[in-house]
Length: 208
Image (cartoon, rainbow, N blue to C red):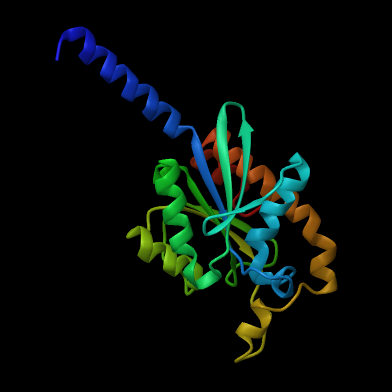
């Protein structure tokens, strides 16, 4: 290959890599269906819906999930609500990462967390599934625990043996009263993650 063609080839791939690095896959975990819409387990869907409402975005059903896209200062955000049900979320995540050629560092998975007080948020770059079946499947499909996850606290205010009823139950009146503000903070976290990077977003939002 001549010097000119080699240079052109290298430049082309450099541009492609740069473009790929500007794509982000933002995944909200939940279960499809109206009966799950306002449950604690579906807070990942709810956060993406709040972002979509603020920015007048529309989700469309595509392969393995509902998709919406948004441009934020030259960066393309692809929002995914898997329609595979919670326990098989990894299939949808892997498909869209591969299809859009998005690197793991530009993946953000949003999920509920029983180990955090209601409304508390914690952004992490790696970790175990913590007993969460959606995260467990993602970990298995991606074959790594090294991906960004945004945990939204739903607390553990349930009696022994009632965990499933609790996570699949709807928000109580006190939670409902405070949820809107927490959803707005969550939208700001997503924007910070994309624009400022995961480390700065963690410093700004963790524990807030």
